[in-house]
Image (tube, rainbow, N blue to C red; front, side, top):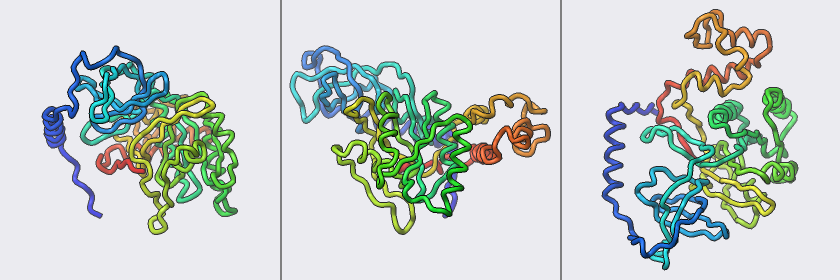
Length: 345
């Protein structure tokens, strides 16, 4: 497959300007006057659909609302002020007028919009990997970098452990021990045997959490197991490609009966970090902190540079060689074509 040509800054700017122009020309399908609306009340964004969003009030009632043009950014998990209409107009119940400051925000790079928020006010990221279709430590490392940038606590979840074999068990467990030694928490789960599900519930009970991971690792199936009443649609992993079918298309927030919230969001097959600087990527590898700034040269690229403190620490077994190699691959990818970052599920 031919490599896509990278857009110039001017092309990106013109595309963005055309999009903005089209949005300005779109009139709201439902017009509200102040007399048609009640007093401002607080709510939480359950899901976003283009120019509309579902808002939950304090009574856990969900209302579909228009979004004021003055609201520049709105994502699942946002805390908002909205006004309910005195009557429903074409299934629209009110208007979202303002967004409260976010405690945290998880974002992804977008070729048109720069950095695009995915979900807000999250306290925990569950990085889901699985035995099949493939256990991919590089993807886990990318999510860990993203999590460290936001201050959101990451937890690594190994799913489908019922499929562990003598051939793959030792290799996967050795990789997970690297993360455990660094200080990350690991949870082993299986939807088939239900092993680890109770432990996972405990981790979710006091947090607003989000599942992230490649397609096919079982994120939506885990949601079904944790919340069977929701009936979230899932599909089998493709027998032909080994990749997961797209099962979740819009981020949505759900509540657990025992406390805690879960945002089920579109996953990815490749997680681009091209919007980060090399220094930010360095900071995402938390075990590097004691060695950063000790390289012989201030502009050390941490690849084959003489006097590199990270390479020296790896040779002294203070940094695991697999983590350094993963870090070097991420640094090398920062200059890759931004269009290769695809977000699917």
